[in-house]
Length: 448
Image (cartoon, rainbow, N blue to C red; front, side):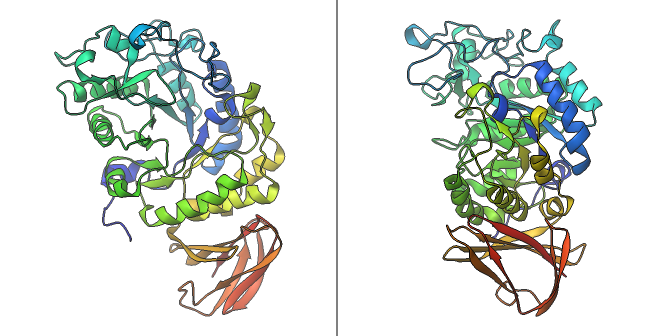
């Protein structure tokens, strides 16, 4: 059922089209340094900004000097949990101010010294014509709780707003915040004022969905953005997002993760066909269901965060399918690759202007066929007077996939068809378009 929620004007200005950019997590885990981040930003500005990729996002645990340096039983290599003692008290210190606000590691981000925080890094990003995004963990640091930190702008203490029983299952750095407590809004206001001072343009807020949707803290963040003095896109992670809160996410954020962490496995891509179909009616200016980053190119440097260091395990056909599905369903496009080792194929995959145009300038994406191993999606570009269609073979053998113009609801029975990857006109077709597609493969076309 289509959403009745209309995007707010201020949200539409921020994310009128699906956000595009690069995120450090897939390649660098939680250990990226300032020099590495800046080097990726340089490549991004040169090779990707001309195609619309404008958000450079620093992912998690930027407040730890050496995250993942303490191997823990049952945890993956480089896991960012901190050592704790009796009662969960931290045995290692994170960078934090007197108000319980996490600060960047001066060892990893040396320009943050002398109280400058991440502003010099954000200034560098802005100087390249890009926007700066920052990952945060929901809640208040465990360290702030045990230090009984004051809350800026409130008489409350961290101990009065924190919920020690509410702790992220995969990262023990934080406790949840009780949104009903005096001081809770003041705490988030103080965070987002700090991020505004730094020059942050996008916040990726993590631990928002699983095992429960953190409705109260989503509202605290949305309220804090409104008062911080700087426009910020709010991105909620990680999924799978609960459909029952779709209208709430539309009203309080700009993008939200509909999948768990998405990696280069066909089974995950196969599952995202179901997820995107379930969420397609909620995509629109200012609010975008997010199928997660694009795990292409070089991933998991030094065997972190997921598996061995490798080039994407997706076949080329699967990578085209990945791009076609994200494009037609209008998911945000956040690159996960190490940009310093970007190869020609991956660059070509990310910079096809005709495919990106489908993602950025279409409306009403929807699945119109799933029969056996055939899947067909459509959308429309009213400004250019064209329909878009993506045809997928999700099976294990070559097969023909057919787009029926009548079944898709197209008003005419004859269209000129263009293949967007080949950038070639295929001719005029009456009543239907049909093509042979390899296993896990796809095509994306326009019809005019």
